[in-house]
Length: 76
Image (cartoon, rainbow, N blue to C red):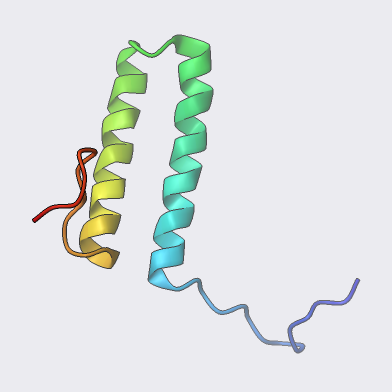
């Protein structure tokens, strides 16, 4: 099958928000895989979960409304 890009051209990089989301999804999949193998209380699983949380909060700070919303509802 032929490439949809003209010969010699490179694909454009993902926009920053989409690239960040792709990184979050990849880490989330890895976290689920690791948790199934090792259990949720394993130190590696807990550390990866913390790193994923940091990545998600970073996305909200950079691309969201400036701060994440709580589970209780919108911030004032």
